Length: 137
Image (cartoon, rainbow, N blue to C red; front, side, top):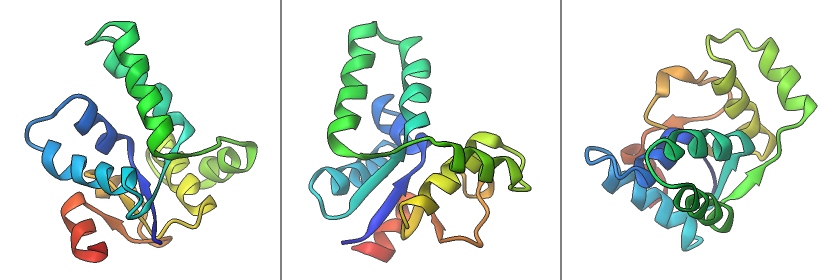
């Protein structure tokens, strides 16, 4: 089974029903839910999703989304090693560096994101949801 790491923007596409991105992102999520692939997310994705979604929906609804993610995805813990490696990565965005090293920690076969330019591609393939389907289906 392939291990895929899901970037926060894919989760938000589904939770927020972002019309332009919802179909493909929800299919990636669905592959994780049905165990066609092993889906991983960073622990920081949970609080990031909650923070964004909580501004739009009641707290209990936001927490329902978090529970759903906990049931579907394996959570990569945020630890000192990931933080130290992320600090040393010559990259613009600390959060994306954390995502990168979280994916490396679980030996992910790829990172699925809509923001490819935010990730260095010398560690593993960085793919869009459409490209994911070309690789793993």
